Length: 299
Image 1: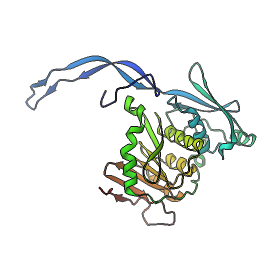
Image 2: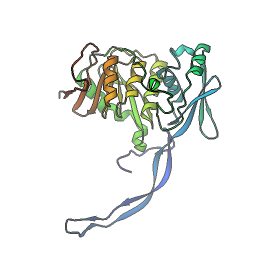
Image 3: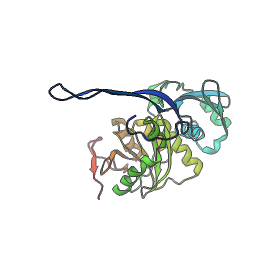
Image 4: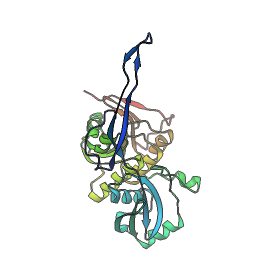
């Protein structure tokens, strides 16, 4: 079970399951056995992944495979980042309903937004956190990225947040199968965090939580435990987030869209080192759209 933490598997979107743990027999360079094979039974904490239907005024719009917690945050964040809602006040009611084969989040939205939704229906049923599944045209796949104002982040702030991220990922600690998204202030202090089996879902949950908590987005940044895809950039900009820091790599399209939106994009954030793929200045136009600046945090 690797380095996973021990804990209560019946909480935080996880369940217990019986497993066989095998330790294969090792051999030295001469082919002789260096250790005997071992096997024993145990219970492991497994991340839950359930279908969650997002229902607007009685119309099921999308079904996402999601961790079954913080679903009100998820529904609001998804609705805002996907352009279904332009403002949180357009969501009048929300109710999480346990169904026989999954969960539905029933929302009542404004008449104007419902009419727009009907006109631009998308079928997103499919893979975990797959934000582009069922998109009907190439034009829908790459939407315009809103302009944002990037904060003046220090290397130390990024490293401070990175060092604290694990403490805010209890589901990952139990299961080893979830992504985290955290909101950090300009000093690198983590103020909010959300988890999900899908990286897009985790970010949507964080954005919904930010909106519901009415936290200011000026000067702060989002930290995600995954790679930075185009859609992570798009969702961040849609929420007015000026900087996105990812533990893994960005895609080329993510860098391109970050430049268009003015988003500060940082990847490969690891202890003592991170890579700045775009500093967040939309007026800075160099000849290489994928050039990077490697920054090593000061001790």
